[in-house]
Image (tube, rainbow, N blue to C red; front, side, top):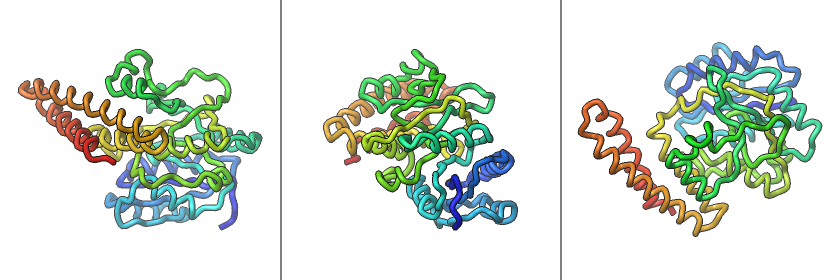
Length: 303
């Protein structure tokens, strides 16, 4: 495979409705940077593969017979590419020329940077996410209770930078990585099925002396959460956080986070149990009860 400026890796799992527009935005951007695209399909049954073969024959496809997880599938894509840089891109995004070309240009001119990303926007153009710090137990308390969001919209993401800024970590919805940095620190840790893998990777980049840089002018529309509803997603998000703490902060911090998640989930379950008899709230209350019960089971068994 001829080397290009940027190899773009997308992982797909039953998200045809968003994958098509994402690819259209990419190929329609008329980038100055050369690129190739690889889609790793995790056993989609919604016609995604048929669409790719008929409408995008230039795209390389890796087919997994089942959902092997985001981190493993992303690694498969990275290992099959040869671009100077690797763009991890969610398939429920819409990209633009200015953002992607500016990210490539930044890595070209800043050899100290191992990764770069920008601002995520909702469909209506409002702020969705920027950059974040590696969390503390106090910050996790603010997140899980919702108090952080009440204090600052978008919490724990920040969006107040006006110039390129070295940060702790960025979302992998649209994250450009230097291949030589990946060669040094390794690929995504596949112990994370989904969620937490990008934080872990950027933690390793920071520890190894690479900068992770936020470019506020690089914007991407991210629909977000289209492959999994929020109740099922909660358990996976918490699992990623627990694994990250245990791996990078040590057993004691991991245990403390499990206690925090257990107590808050138990309190939420009690609250929703009280709400459940209200007919208009019964459907949501049932989903909330199940989601919090799933988190309690996760906290009890995760090692």
